[in-house]
Image (cartoon, rainbow, N blue to C red):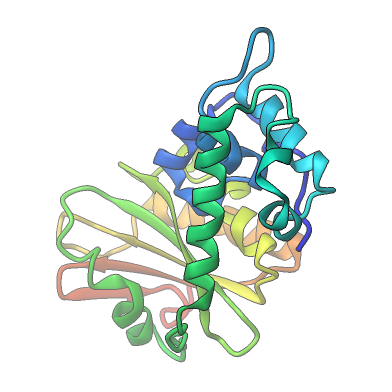
Amino acid sequence: MCVSLQPALGPDLPRERLWQHGAEALTTVELLAVLIGTGRAGIGALAVAQAVVRSVDGSLRRLATRPQGELLRTPGIGRTKACRLLAALELGARLARETRPGLPRIRAPQDVLRCAGQRLRDLEVEEFHVLALNSQSEVVRDVLVSRGLLNGSLVPPREVFRTPIAEAAAGVILLHNHPSGDPTPSAEDRAVTRQLVAAGQLLDLPVYDHVIVAGDRFVSFATEAML
């Protein structure tokens, strides 16, 4: 299992990006930097995390099987930080051994509601999610892209498509809620959708639908021929 050595572009610190966009949006280097926490004199946590990943040629599997003492050879990694990394890797291994439930399959907007819409229907703040689907129309990842009033600046295509690209998704479904109780798409909803549909076409990652949830009501852009 090989991973990219490059951290994501942008000024945001990994912990801030994780809190805002979810762990799925971070690169492996950024996730390791969150665990490492701090660097050493003149070198930040991201640089230390990059050094750890380079030492195993980008392989998390190789990192998990290294002797414990070898982690200490990386400048900036002491016993405390090594213990954090080892604990995280063991948790990941235990998670991988658990039986994975069947993936939800999307055949209609109602399936989107059952899969992810229920927890959005009564929220008092808008959340914008992207569902990454595989070639069998199964949801492989539900990513929170933004929280707050929907506008184009809060839903950049880079954040929307980052995880679906990493998951080799076949397509995506956009999903957000209207706390007002009225699911009617606003002009901003339509503009954001057009922007993301165009970006998906450039990336060969189609936007199958955009579903807006408001209480017990919803609107599907695909059903209403608005895509």
